[in-house]
Structures are given as C-alpha cells and as structure tokens.
Image (cartoon, rainbow, N blue to C red; front, top):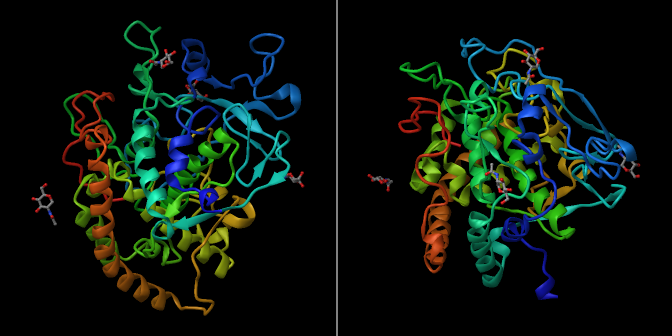
Length: 432
Ligand SMILES: *[C@@H]1O[C@H](CO)[C@@H](O)[C@H](O)[C@H]1NC(C)=O
Ligand SMILES: *[C@@H]1O[C@H](CO)[C@@H](O)[C@H](O)[C@H]1NC(C)=O
Ligand SMILES: *[C@@H]1O[C@H](CO)[C@@H](O)[C@H](O)[C@H]1NC(C)=O
Ligand SMILES: *[C@@H]1O[C@H](CO)[C@@H](O)[C@H](O)[C@H]1NC(C)=O
C-alpha cells in the first residue's frame, strides 16, 4: 500500500524520459529545410518513408495546417511591433504545425490531450495533485534526487533556439542555431524566454516593459500550462498515470485575477513579490525563478485556487480580454513559447473535467466574496512566508547531501542565448 502511494513531482521529473512532449522546438523541426519553409509537422510513424505520416495523418490523428495566430491589438504598453520573435507566436519561426483531431495531441499528434490516455486516447484519466506536506520522508527524498536527475538528463524531444529568428540559420545560412538542454533547465528556459526583454538592436538598450506570462490575465493560464506540460511529459513517458505534481498551500497569487477586468492590486502584487524576495535564492529573480523548485509548489497552489475559482463562479471566458490586453495576454494569443501552439482560452477550463487532474485540497464550501478571498489570501501569504522558509531550508539541506545538486540548477546568466549586448542582469521585471 505504502510503496504504491501516488507519486509526486519527483517522479514526474525523474521519469521525463522518452516520449513526445510539448514546447519550443521539437528536434525534428530544427533543420534548415523545416526552418526555411516554416513548417513543423513531424512524421509520427512513417512506415512508407519520410514524409508519409506527417502529424499521424495516415491514422487520422492529425493534419499539417496553417498556424492561427492572434492578430487583435494589444495594449499600447508595447510599442515595438515587428521587433520581437514572440509577436504572433510562433509565426516568426513556423507557419504550419500539426493540428490534432479529437483527443490526440503533441507536436506530431503522437500523444493524448490532457485527461486521456490509451492507444486511441479514449480512456479517461484523473490524477490527484497532493500536498507536499502529506508526503513521507522517503517520498520527499525521492523528489530531491529526481530534481538532480532532471538537471543532468538531456531533454529527449526539445531543443532551444540560441539566436533570434533572423539569425537562426547561422552565419552561413545553413547551420541552425539550437542547443540541447537538460530537462530541468528546459523548464527554467521556457519561463525565461517568456519574460526576457525585447532586443532593439546592437548598442541600444533592450525594452523591459514586456512580459508574456505575468502582469496580465495570461498569468494563470500560462503557469497552468507550464506545470501541466511537465506533468504530462512524465505521464506519457512512463505510461504511469498514478503521478502528479505537488502543491504548497499558499494563497499568494489568487489576487492576480481578483479584478474582473484582469487588473490586479499593486499592493497585493508587492506582497506576492515580497514572498519571492524572501526566498532570496533564484526564486527571487524574475527570469530564473523556476530554478528554485519551490516555484513549482507555489504555482501549483495558485493553480488550485484558479481552478476553484473557475468552478465556484462558473467563470465565463468573457472575463478574459479578447483584445487590448498586454501583448501575449489576449484570449486567443498562443502562449509563448509553448509548442505546439496553444491559446490562453484552452487553459481557461475546469481541470477535473477538461484537463484530467484535480487537487487533494479541501475548500470551504461557503461562498466567499471577492474581498473576503483577498483578505484570506493576504493572511495566508504572511503565514506562508514563514512556512516556505522552513520548507526551503529543508530542501536546501536535503540538496546539500547530494554532490552535484550543490550547483545551482541554472547559472545566473543563461550563457547560451545571444542577442548582442543584451544582458540578462538587472532585470526589473516582475517576480513570478
Ligand atoms: C509566415 O508567414 C508570414 C506571412 O506570410 C511571413 O511573413 C513569415 O515570414 C512566415 N514565416 C516563416 C517562418 O516562414
Ligand atoms: C475523447 O474520447 C472519448 C471516448 O472515446 C469521446 O467520447 C470524446 O468525444 C473524445 N473527445 C473528443 C474531443 O473527440
Ligand atoms: C542533441 O543531442 C542529440 C543526442 O545526443 C544529438 O544527436 C544532437 O545532434 C544534439 N543536438 C544539438 C543541437 O546539439
Ligand atoms: C538576499 O540576498 C542578498 C545578497 O545575496 C542579501 O544582501 C540580502 O540581505 C538578502 N535578503 C534577505 C531578506 O535575506
């Protein structure tokens, strides 16, 4: 019984190994030809030779289709249209991708949508995400070892672009600029890429008032997908569905969406930042915050609150702005830099019915008003700061026992990505 207890984040990182996953960019699509044509539609089972089963078309799983990218106006806060690869994501890199039918999913339609499994993706799955504090010492220890393993294992599916789209083919026009990355660093990279500044040219200061995953309504949908992606990788990988990520009880982030217009209270926001700063490791720096595993716990809890809100208020997508949100935050925008393209709308759904997971957490059944929720959140946040501190110290102590895990998961500067003169230091963007 004990030995078979449902597993945790540790497992999902450790087991990330062999099967299709989602995000930037599948290794198959990083050839000069694919990039020149702007087509990323890998074969699934090309029995009759290369190109004969694009997107699993021969078995009806999907088709290679033109990408749909949001073209509605964004807020005027971002005045540099035409300068950033993340605009109209992912059309600066690819204009055609797989569109999967029914319950199929993935960059070549080789996997199932969240909540489904089986060869035909017709069996329902529901995973339960558990509280870190409910795990045994053994399970927690496994978690730490798994992080260490994830840090050292090359991501099986995805590579990262090390240059902007203009230079992606290299100096000779025939040397695609991509690099392998470890599983955990990849998770960190995705976050970094979504918040990095806009490069405006050699010798010019990069533009920092841009953030595709924070400071707007996409905060919740983006982070939901970021976590789901990791969890899903692991599940597909091991065909082991008794796996889920963890959450940590905290209410820091609920406030991000407390105002129906999608704005949030700056006072509350600084409270949120305060907790991140208190962590004061990489968790306190914007672009590298996922580097600290506590990131996962915090954001998973945020997601639990988001899901409760969606269910309790029967939330309607009309509360999510269709246009004029900060760039990246319109309802139909493809979240940057996930692959294949997925819009905010697709994550604005209740998790148990649509995404195949639920939370162990018990909520009071009483209906709270928005102001009560904010009050509770603020109090919980203060308590949390203390709890996190204890939790973080435990993790750090546990980590110190492992030789290699003594290194930061990813260095302070991401060395591999080059946009001339762009420096990753001194970022003043929001915390996670
Ligand atoms: C995608 O299409 C747009 C509009 O036709 C074009 O400007 C862009 O260069 C294309 N991108 C790629 C990667 O082919
Ligand atoms: C997913 O599979 C189930 C079971 O076969 C089916 O009823 C459902 O329609 C499928 N969903 C979609 C979107 O095709
Ligand atoms: C990444 O690693 C794989 C397998 O080790 C190798 O085949 C591939 O060439 C590497 N890709 C890059 C861009 O270094
Ligand atoms: C955070 O770290 C910095 C330097 O690493 C230190 O100066 C500062 O006092 C720390 N803050 C807290 C709250 O521990």
